[in-house]
Image 1 (cartoon, rainbow, N blue to C red):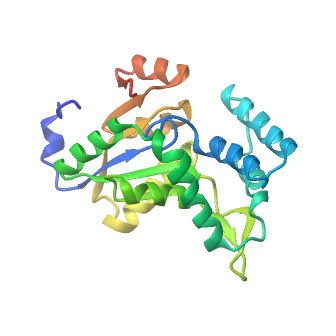
Image 2 (cartoon, rainbow, N blue to C red):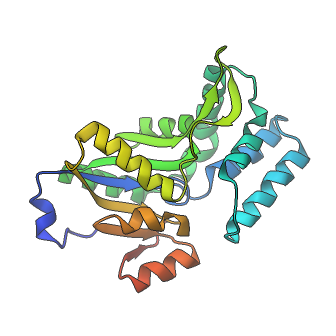
Length: 234
């Protein structure tokens, strides 16, 4: 990875964050889409339910307006009323079997380099928390903030998103809330940010050093017009 080209960045007393998107950045692919295919294979979603979600993915690809919570409710129809601990175990196994082989080695390399600089390395993602937490167990970042679903009083998952899905502008907001609570307001800075999708522009724009990783066309154009580094990861 590149050396720090701004010497002032190395002199700050603030906690420096290195923040990574997950889907399309750390991994090759989209874990929610892969999960839908996995659920259909396990007969937890029907073909037509999968088709409905697939149409959402198509609209997302063409940057059409979407209700991020509603599609997650459709996916979690497979888990509605099921014990949350058992569902989380299912999601962890899904990560091990399907997602882990798609992890990009360059993500680990840059994470280790930033950690050696003294950065706090974290992932922020629209995927589900259990998937992101499982990735954290095997890779060099310290924590992940992802999408959570509401758990009822009996300990079972519902189809309701807890708060707002960690998507688009919400990624920057959750990083700010987390860092203010953990390190104190004004005592941290967003040194590096990595993302692949045009919806990551807000997060990347807030970083001192943004990286567009194998970006989609809108993000690639935006990154080049703003002089950002564009990385082509395997």
